[in-house]
Length: 77
Image 1 (cartoon, one colour):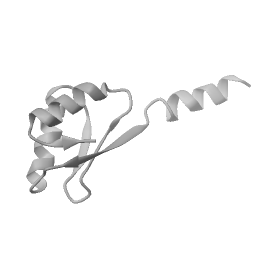
Image 2 (image 1 turned 90 degrees about the vertical axis):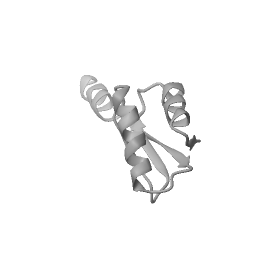
Image 3 (image 1 turned 180 degrees about the horizontal axis):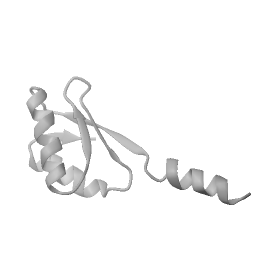
């Protein structure tokens, strides 16, 4: 019986997303460029210009994500 709760946690909690605030985007293309830069690094992300947010899976190295976003010319918090 103890296996079911652990399996639920592994499936649902180990791949939670984290949301970060991104500023400096001028249009929706900026969000697309951020997504493409992160994808090139093997990071699946969803960036929204209108919400000024970036969503990534929690298991990615946030330092690497921040470095990529800043290198592209945007601020991330």
